[in-house]
Length: 90
Image (cartoon, rainbow, N blue to C red; front, side, top):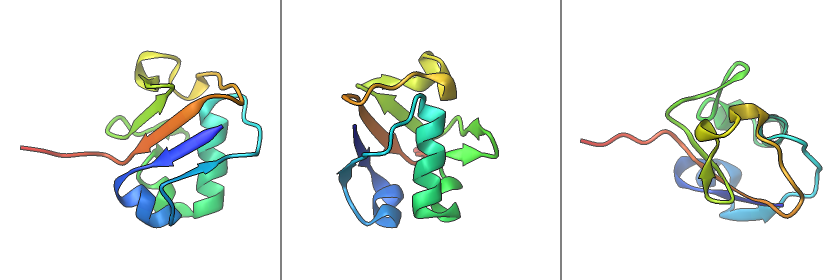
């Protein structure tokens, strides 16, 4: 599966995207694996304990997981996951 990073998440991961080889059944499993890989600084922008931060944007094949099954959203090895940190505007 391809995982793409934007904003400060890209800076923390040190890459724009990667082919994630570890199988993950759900987006929650994937996010926990990504946080384990890149550390708590990465995690603080997408997860609050066991919950998805509402301001973070996580897309699976272009669809926001907040409108799907949130952390329980199922994944396939061919999926494209996009991670955006919380954004603010005015």
